[in-house]
Image (cartoon, rainbow, N blue to C red; front, side, top):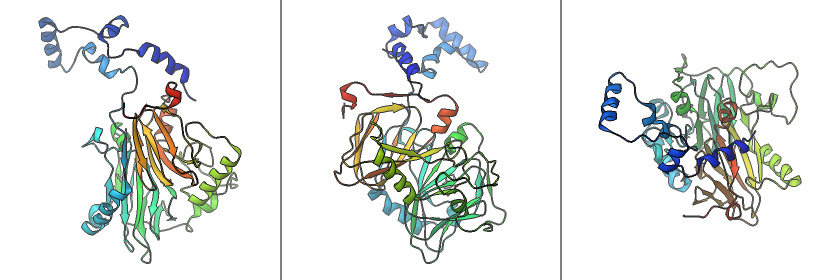
Length: 387
Ligand code: 1HN
């Protein structure tokens, strides 16, 4: 799965990548401007063409160069602003009442990191947002509140703190909070920037604005939620998981069981991917998700890999060093790791578990043979902070 040998190969050739001399001897473009060439470039531009050697080194980096930067979004800063949005606009007017997370490296474009979108959505008791469908896939991670629900293709499911929920591409989906509930906030994650980059974005509003609930509540959990048991004679030919709601309690229990018999990974300690129960693969074709447990006192080593990753702290306190910057986090904070940036995680508590929810474009990277990873070898596997 990891293409580590290839990475080493690339590294060898990529050394001194900013060095013109090396570009030259390594057979990279290194053409100096001359009046004759400048006139030639001008002439080519008239015909909507260009000389590849003027842009080749830029469009073919030695290694991935993310335009996103690591960011930590602190929930204690954001929560009041998310609550405020509920006073300012209605779900009817806003369509989706969401405060989106924007990466400073990509401002004006919308992504939280790479080609992933994320935002915080709030619904008040008694509110309901209308049903729509799009070619983007979406997921939710529930942060707080009681009484929230989502309906996906006629299946209603309840949303509780730390539940992970799918609304795969093409499905009708709508959300609301029961009248006797409390204000509910969750994180949305979408592949929309990827889908738009591929120029494949479609969107439609449900003709009746709301769907009929055609199945018993939480039917996907009843059918597909049992560990390692597959229901008999249930046809499912969709490219995404038939289980739409992954509840927190069994997820945490599974992590604890795994932890009880495993030394864990030096980078991630105890990490489990949410899976499509039919295939064992990722939950959707474009986005995958995981929950990891950092046991008390865990100090992770640094590694890096391709793909864009958005974390939410489901439990505990600690910090992550991302591209040489330390980010201290606590429950409900969100942070991102851009592609090919070194990162390492630490649980600062000696007594309490820390759990990190994470979603990513890993399935895309794997399917397209673009997944590479490597460990940091110098400095005993730890980044130097602030250098
Ligand atoms: C969307 O459909 C939802 O269904 C939330 O709750 C956020 C952001 C961009 C595009 C579609 C939702 C979204 C979104």
